[in-house]
Amino acid sequence: MVSPGPARPAGRTSAVELPDEWYVACLSSELGRRRPLARTVLSRPLCLFRDGDGRVAAVVDRCPHRNVPLSLGRLRDGLLQCRYHGWRFDRTGACRAVPGLCADDPGGRGRSAEALQCVEQDGFVWVFPGAAAAPPGGPPFRFPCVDQPGYDTVRRSLVSAGTVHAVAENALDVPHTAFLHGGLFRGAGRAPVEIEVVVRSGPDRIEAEYIGEPRPPGVAGRLLAPGGGVVQHWDRFLLPSIAQVEYRLEDNHLLVTSALTPVTPSQTRLHSAVTFSLRVPHAVIKALVPPLAALIFAQDARILRRQAETIERFGGEQFASTEIDVLGQGILRLLRRAERGEPGTDPSDELAPERRLFMRL
Image 1 (tube, helix red, strand yellow):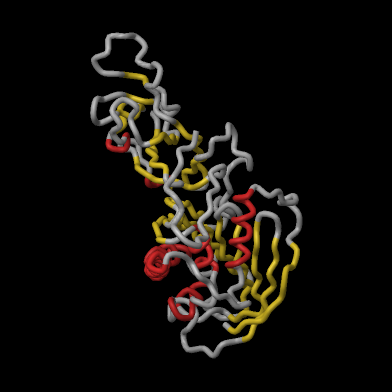
Image 2 (image 1 turned 30 degrees about the vertical axis):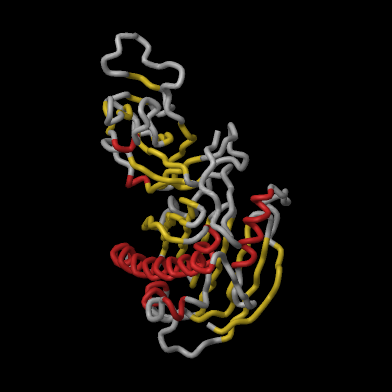
């Protein structure tokens, strides 16, 4: 049974509740074999750990004995041991040891910790917080190209204020990059160029293709294509919470894929994979991506925090949009339909063009 989370923010909000989906809880690299890790997904406090075989596990972060967070404990002989009285739990949540108890079977009614379905793949740990016996949508999303020869991946994780919708729109919003990230990405003094944008939508996704875009000026653009040229550029959102930016130029290929996990209705954790196959030596890219990504993500996090504070101060959201706010409204429509449980067509169907527009970048 899924515990109810806190009420949604007052007033108009883009927050949605989609519990019957997979969400990334942490990076694989964050989860060692000695200490558990505390995470919150959909307002549920969770304790993540690895058993003696290195398999990932997730339980609700509360010992059934005396309500102490299990994430305060440690791993002993492949079992999660509570710090308070030493009760030990396996990856299914079953109690396997109660120190001092003479009974042969320490398990018993009410002594198990509540366990969640948990999967490790592509360098991330996924949890399923829903009440369904099996995830209706099947296994978790696969991050593209991470295991493909010739590609490397840099992974990052951070928490941001804002709903999943707000954070997804920010990740896929092109116009703000010339101002918030000026010099790092776009906005480096080049005169704006008019380009065509084709927006396509499907039952579980929406994407924008930017046609005729010169290589973006700034540090990030020079890493993608030192010699310049016209890039192929797509931004896309996939239900329930995947935001992806893709660039291609000749044999250069860059993908930034972010799995957005709702921590609370107004806070989101981004788990991002920057995957690339570039002419620039990959050792150089792997050294430069972490500080560059940290700077860009920090700028986004600051503006999203101020956005969230303003929404709270005024008691709700209020948006005025133009056609160059390309994906925001479509993302919200997808999230709202999914929350209402409205059926779509086959997700494998081809994306249909929704509209064409022009913008200056």
